[in-house]
Length: 50
Image 1 (tube, rainbow, N blue to C red):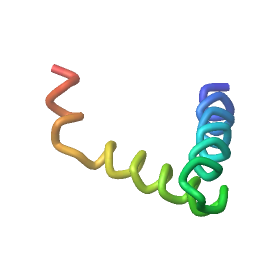
Image 2 (image 1 turned 90 degrees about the vertical axis):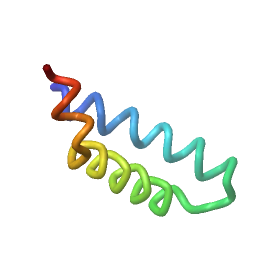
Image 3 (image 1 turned 180 degrees about the vertical axis):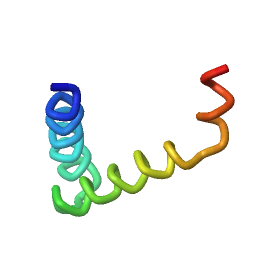
Image 4 (image 1 turned 90 degrees about the horizontal axis):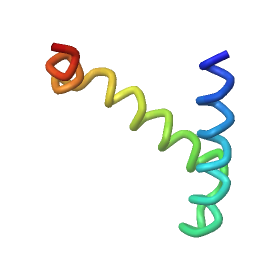
């Protein structure tokens, strides 16, 4: 359920960002995926849980 929600939000953001930034929706979605993954790899995330 949560995965579907996040995926839908990401697609909507990619559509809007792509339109405003002049890039394709798939390119914008790739950038969102990379940023999301980088956020999970960041050390700040581990610190935020404590």
